[in-house]
Length: 304
Image 1 (cartoon, helix red, strand yellow):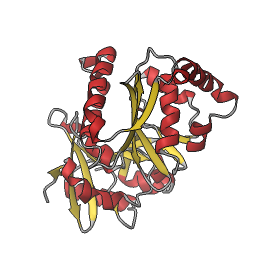
Image 2 (cartoon, rainbow, N blue to C red):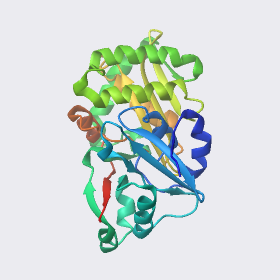
Image 3 (cartoon, rainbow, N blue to C red):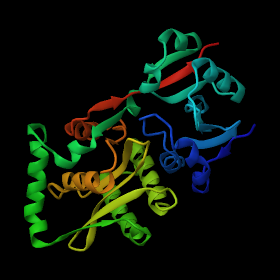
Image 4 (cartoon, rainbow, N blue to C red):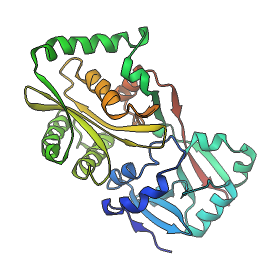
């Protein structure tokens, strides 16, 4: 059995397996897997007996090679089955095992076969969509104030236009991304998380239709000054995969976030804003929106 590299062309093959997947960890999305595949770890897949197996592999760090939980169209798998799959496919660990999966198991059954380690850097932030749309109460007073400041300065003078991202706007968004990355040093070695994210954003924008992602952009005085891109994770949860905005325009990020909640996710109960990539400023921003839950990620290493 041979794994094959995942590409955009494989989206239609992968999608049916994820339609009913129950996990709230953002990695369990074909659009996300494809977007992030061309960075440190290269994603591969194989389908065996109508079960999808996805691996992350890196020639430079073979010790990080792993599987994510196998995806079936109609069932979950026990720890004993996970152990057998990994042995058969010649992997010794699973990554991105959601905390909600572990919560449904007996700890003793899992510990018979695996060593469990939390992956704190991959813990996702999840919010109630209605909270991010309405921003009610004292806990969101600072967000509302920043949006009001942005509104007074820009919207009242008709300087702002909000649009859906289509293929026609992709080049403008890519140009804005280059400007944003120069301001935030995406490409320097010590900021590898931002460098990887840049590649993922480019992949998503260039194939936004094929990946069934949705996005909005904000123009100020005709120029793209912010954009957000999201995708479906499961029936109740969507993922806000990427948000970029000029940080020197007061209130723009907060306005963008609110527009994404209203324009992209109104049909979902929850919005997953992914992890903070161990970036302190990003963590502070995500916490400031009062997540209703944090979805933990774990690594399971096979015991001999």
